[in-house]
Length: 191
Image (cartoon, rainbow, N blue to C red):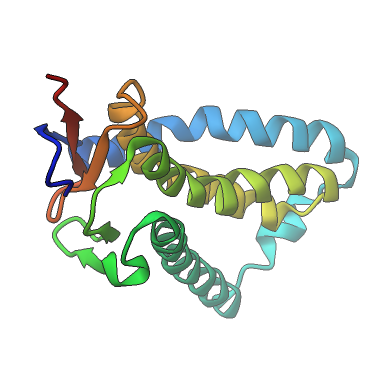
């Protein structure tokens, strides 16, 4: 870290079991926020039998593949965004899976300022979740709407971590916790 400055360190983590439950709970408001406007705009053109009746084995494999690819892209977005702010770029990123909870992760090995960390934490939720859902409201794509809703929900753990640090001083430092869902906050000690 910064040798000439002193910091106090605090561990801030979230419980992954709670985060997964929260993701399911938040699904209802997410569906309402995006699904209701979609329905109001496109209700006369919706054909639910056509949408869900055609899901055979090949379509299910296709959907599963899109979800897996989206999960990988979600973590890459974290890594690329944080790498922009990290002194060592992509060399400071570590990717993996917490197998116990089947949770993929991107870990930034160096501390970042709170504001920059938050940008990297929220980026996948916006790029893969919110933006596709909003675009779907305008273009009528039910597939894009479902994709956006799913990846907004998938970013719930990120939103919970952002909530832990949102009131911190934007110039203090945050470093990902290497083995748990959370981070360390380094608050500058002012003498």
